[in-house]
Image (cartoon, rainbow, N blue to C red; front, side, top):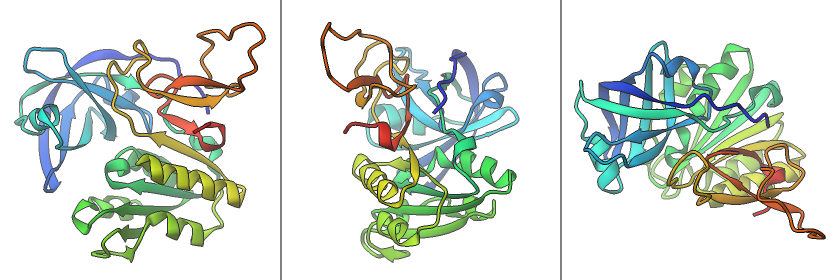
Length: 275
């Protein structure tokens, strides 16, 4: 996984559109001409609420075309509720682009994308770029209920084969989407984003099939820039994404380091994680 150099900055944007594809799930479109053209699939931003205090919320970039980008969020608390209530024309400061994103060049010509819930958001740009290069793409998209499966048609419109699953059986396969992934086989590479239990299962399936998987980890970030070390995950010491600090004590034999999901990630190779 290449580690991208950071050119992140705080960008002033303006809300240009808003929609709610499902109750409690909101997509906010922003005009951000100095940010949108530079976003890579899988990167995220810290959205700074306009209420006065500079408290930020980490959100994966959903769309990025010309000078517009969009953010998908689930309303779960006061900060996401305030973001979801922004009206067209409202200002919104965005710190980004942040994170390393997906490595498209290593996924091959037949790629499986795996999404759990709003983990679908970071995968749309990746699907767009893969399809533009002629890559065959299948999206395995799961959620608890049919209402939480949003915008599957956006992927279909790109020529992506979409396979759906719900925990309650209200749409598509009745069960976990990873069960469908395991039955499918034949993929050159896997890219996934969703809850940690789902990502662990994707990692297991990839290993059993001899396929490498890139996992975008979901986490609540405090700073989003790696300063606070509050969002760490054990990572193989030999990984190119392993941070060079803090240094090991003399004679220490530990084979892993703690990498910051917001800084060294959020995308990691599954086989390098030491969960």
